[in-house]
Image (cartoon, rainbow, N blue to C red; front, side, top):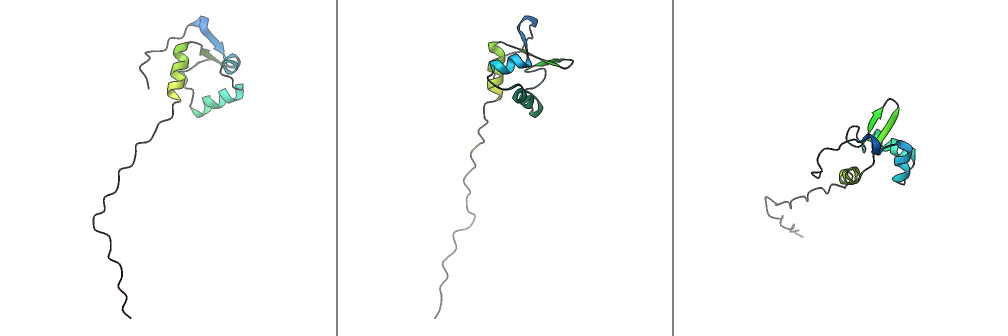
Length: 94
C-alpha cells in the first residue's frame, strides 16, 4: 500500500452510495457487494451513519481504492535442486 497519509472525511465532499456507484460506473448492488466482500473497508473507504453509507469523493480516496485493488503478484517459486542424480536407465537382460 502506498503512503497516502490519513484519509480525512470532509462533510462537504461526502456522497451517498447511489452517487458513488454512478461515479464509479457501477451498480449500487455492486458497491454493496464490494462492501460485503471487504473490497471497501469501513473507516478506510467509507463511513456509515445509521443505514446510510457515505463516501468521501476526492482524488486521495480514488488513489487509495485503486492502490488497494492492485493485484498482488506472488513471488516466483525457487528452482528445485535434486539431492541425487537422475536414475540410470534399466538394463534388460535377454
